[in-house]
Image (cartoon, helix red, strand yellow):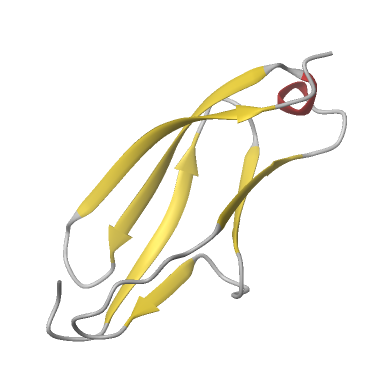
Length: 84
């Protein structure tokens, strides 16, 4: 926990052109109040008809970066397409 308000930037890396969006905000950053946690819903999308949308699964990595320091963490996950 931080003792000051902290802004985090969320992003993703993948071989496929995937997009990330955050529920309740128009950007890719969220601010967390001092000594609190925040639950943030993250959406990953692929363009209709793209290879990722048609593939069964596409690996990706989600990054969360503290904008007030050099700290960042990642989580590997899977984007599930239609598999056709």
